[in-house]
Image (cartoon, rainbow, N blue to C red; front, side):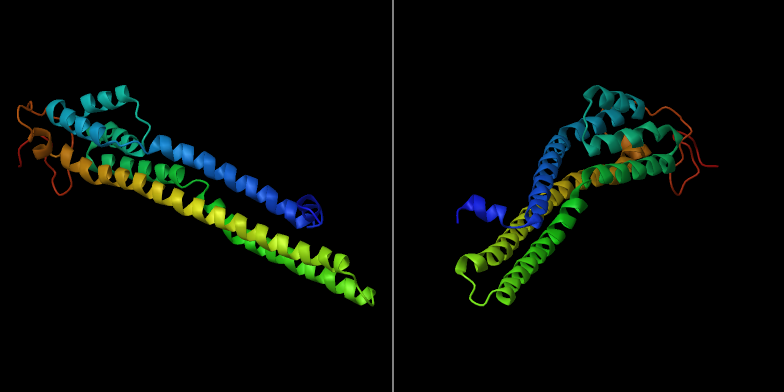
Length: 234
């Protein structure tokens, strides 16, 4: 019995596993491409934005970000925070929190489906194994002296489905873990920006670099203080 005959005799569940394997490979390839585009190192852009923020203020830094057109989550969180900087630190923080949640959804999209495939594939293989063994027992019950070819039909169905289920599960599991590790690294960069930006927008952060211009007075209040930037405590 050659490979083609084995596949033909493996039963309908094998085709389900083959369809699942195509879905797993396609999803993994698409997510790897997306994460590769989002995973560019934003360190240089972050440092340049920090310098522009300290020298010229949040509006100029936002213009610099828009000019860079960086699609990374870190850049998106920066845009969200700088875009609300004129409304105060709480508004900027809230905008960055919302941006982080949206970027997390974009980074981890499809990973739960791969995890589900890794769990379901062995179960489908086990179901195919049971069906194959039942077919073999039916041969025993209907034939007094079954031939090896008659028994091989059910046994081959059982073993092929078991192997196919394990192969699909291994591919899905490895792909999911690799993609999750990549997404975690990218998400950490966005979290770093969310933690650092409020310090950039503080009076010390805006004026802390050598040669920085005076900060214009705007209606921006920071946590723990009711004093606008450039104003005096009363």
